[in-house]
Image (cartoon, rainbow over all chains, first blue to last red; front, side, top):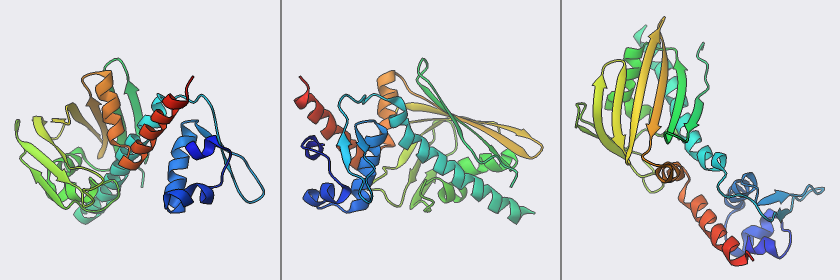
Length: 90
Length: 153
């Protein structure tokens, strides 16, 4: 965020100073984007991020999303597991 | 598979309750067993699909349970105490200060499952939701909050 306050930057420019891999940085950026703090500018090849001033941190859906995905993943597993043991019973 | 493979999620901010609803094409006796027997639980509990590294269940009111993910560094064990056991219709437990209720309704060999997680306050609900956020993301938010505070005028 501090880096973006100085101007827009691409994923590789953002990843470098932290020594992080690009997928890791991309994941963080996605969270910040969904929360409305930053946005992507479409360029020919690069998609530099810009800082959006005045986002709302208390956005409930942003908080619930990882929690919801965790339980959904769990229930998806349960669904396929039940299918497997149901077949075995028949 | 006939199952409608989607989970419906609702949040009631007045009762600090998160509710998940899902249908399964299995009888509710089987779904109940899947929730209460370690040899079943270990195969589906971890959202990543990895089997649990440890799963202990003392299925009686006041009995405790502990589900430990293989990747325990990122996801702490899910541990708590059973409160109500009504095979195969209902299971109530306490975990992380919240009350979890699993209700199973059966029809034509299918099961409609409702899982609700009731927190004690809105702060507790928020805390609870944040547990699902992995530590790195949460740190990112902490850094961000600090940053916004410093730059706010």
